[in-house]
Picture 1 (cartoon, rainbow, N blue to C red):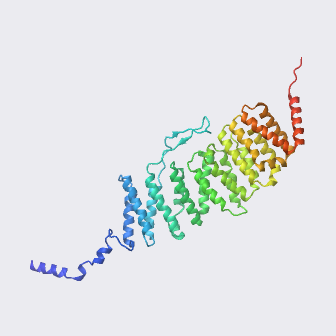
Picture 2 (cartoon, rainbow, N blue to C red):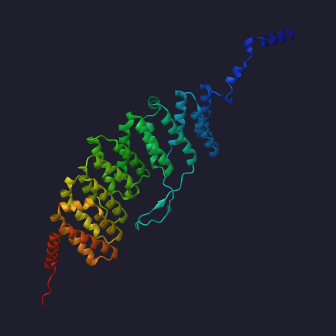
Length: 424
């Protein structure tokens, strides 16, 4: 016993056996340090939270998980030292586990009323995702990393697979998630230039699938917003690749059933192309007329509005060639039995550009327009439409009185000649 006691005493007296206060202080993960986390403490803290929030086996309280994610965001924001690669790998693993998930099938929708809804059209309000409060923090972490890390560091941790994973989430029914994705995807496009071509092709693939296969996707409007910013940065003259995108994707998007849900974003993208190269306007106008809906008044109104905006941006050299097909089509809209479509079409006469287009090809378009206006005045059921038609009639007389009366008499003669005579 004595020998053992002496040996214990001698061991305890050895200076290396006692941990110093500094040693204990440095290795205590719960110590509040005034000068920020050390690498080891930060790494342990991050890995602990990542392990907890990435666990898919045990049920986790949503409130606790959100608290952990919020704390993680606070930790990386307040760290005064750059995040090391091992920590970034853990963070990206956490983001991937929580974001890249199979999206649920379309939820039961709540029907709501719409002024412009067709009888066979279902207008719905989606139910917000229950786990959005957690996802919101995950997206905040990703956005913080994109903004604060340099390009070279981001390129080590973001690849094509990660980008495709983000793109797949645009079909989420949660509008706030799609808004976050739009900002993040655009941030990546701006910062990581090496991925721009891949991102454009990937988004084009989603749009092509939507046009020609599914005609169902929740994130088309958000993707077109990204495209609007991308197109705005295209250099002039436009590359052939970009013109192909206009011809094969943007223009065919006008024919899909759900065009009304993203018509503003689509119109802006097309407008950007025509603004950069105005001669493309002729192609766009003819194709939109070709894809005109047969029984969807809301969509017709949206397309009339888009055509009116395009006419303002057309190269005046195209007016003469486009005047007859454009005015012939608008005359059909003037005579629509749907009063909202007819009124919106007749309001196009308030556009100086449209009146100028008519003036460049009066000999060709006057017979068509005057015949259509006379039909409205004579037989349309809606009084407001008739009143607008009278206003247009006055404009036509003012543009060229002689041609107006000549055309009026010619139309009257053709009408009498075509009327069968009752013989006794």
